[in-house]
Length: 462
Image (cartoon, rainbow, N blue to C red):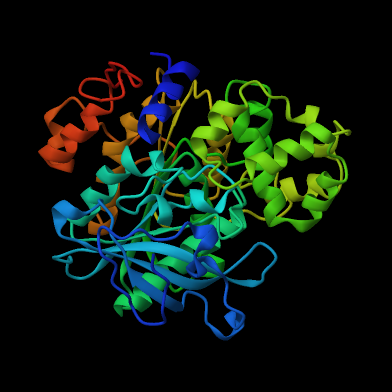
């Protein structure tokens, strides 16, 4: 089954069809509207940020979200201290859900959504809110309610950080990884959870990029976190390889967003590119960073764009400082200028071999390199899926793996080989993993019951 640009366009089009924060937790009526993040002081780093510890909560507020309602979960936004790519103290925001009946002992599920844009109001924390017409709402209404709903069913505490930060630095790995790890710390601090609380992480696509960087940085940046497992699919492991793969193709908007995001994280790259932008490039960069320019606009505005047409220098990737930055912004050891870490905890990684948005081979290389250094990875390539269909194929196995990681029962396989088949979305196994209500929501995404037509199928998992 082939997912076309037209089908994704239909999906995005259909899916997209005030109070200030205080130091103490503040309750918001479900009908109240928060300001756009550009106009909300909650999204501003305080001048005394350096006085806060990493992961320390600066302020919080209770917020209305539709996610978790079936589980009677309470949802909050936390502003906390983290670190940016330049090793500077900055603030960030995370959304957390507190289960009505927490598991004992407490377990923390960190979910990374695919934001995939470089505007502040595309942030997950804004997209999750109830009753607003947010520009990136599409990221909060498809698979996300199923994933977070499942976690709350298990009694897990859930945290979803705005991993791109206040600069919306898409694909900036260090920034994303540290924001996630500090978001987990913030949840632990906010709920006064035990220091040894088990943690697991999950994400797909842009969310997988953030997840793999959090796993890679965990040992050095947050060694006290008790991470027991991670699962991610459709993972961009190399900024350079992903850019090269996308540029000039139907999803070239993501290549442009990557250049914009990395530049926002690396001031030397920003100034280097700005000096070489032509008139069209200046206009385009301003546009992609504009208020409300989110994932739908990124996809629909720039199909088949050659990003090099925006600059007066077509050798940018091979020149300093960009060449050096790209050697940092990768977890593929063969490309990296540093030693890529090997997480000690088990991981489940899945990817479509003919993926048309995130190239398969770099991800396979990453798994091979990690396994050669002693990693514990269950790797599941899908030979007949593409980016969106692979997400649906891998979601149930991914969540089942997370549960096994929390329970200490992950299957023993040779690193880099698939886990045993455990669930397909059209089989009763999906109901056993997700529960019948969430399983039916997931099935609706494969084109059988979806209000978006048939963007995912009909499909039959391999």
